[in-house]
Image (spheres, rainbow, N blue to C red):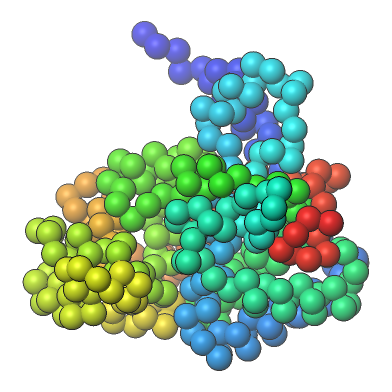
Length: 338
């Protein structure tokens, strides 16, 4: 019989995650920058009021920042030479997604899932500028992303939750890691579960976090195959979506991920899945005769449960491999290292 005892490498992985998480605190800036949360909230509220889609964009920035980190397999390789581990290389929620490319550096912005897709950098710049005006080189860009994501959700009617703080900023980023770590919209359910599990996130976390697709839009190129070729899709929904996404051309045309209430953070996304109106292939995989069907049904009927699980999942995601203590740095400009 196979042993159920975790391997030394797995224990090492869990140790580093636990240590990093333990160093985060919701009161981290209470003394060093007491007005930081209200400052971030005011900028986000204004940005979302000006363009509701910006709320989804800021939330997505945090997700794309956190999800680019070392995989479990990489940790197993690391543990063979644990003394060589450089914490600055264990990217997670570390602001690495914000770094611009330079002549000597290629970061995450031009990775396939990000190029001409992620946005909101100007809002982050505005937040950072206002935060620096009250607390010089105290608040990290990584923490700004985490708080801005929460404030965006709240601004669009979603749940509030307590953000853990104390992350520091990476001094590097990885184009290849972004290309391989971020889950594409073509994934199957098993692929989604594996992708999230590799970050230490449960199936409940995965489904709840997918509920963020109750706001925002997707490009035609990311869902064309579904609306023209897949069988598990409502016919009227497919036809109406095809009007803005031709079978060829129009790759950048946008359609809302939630056609019912695209600018409100609610549980309509899950109701859409039950009606086979998920826009992305990966969306509909959550309700397609698999292990997550019952959870989708619960969320479609119970907003409070979805909101509670989403809040927990966001905190869990925010704990993916943060840099803390003296690792990394506090950037003066979120787009470049100091």
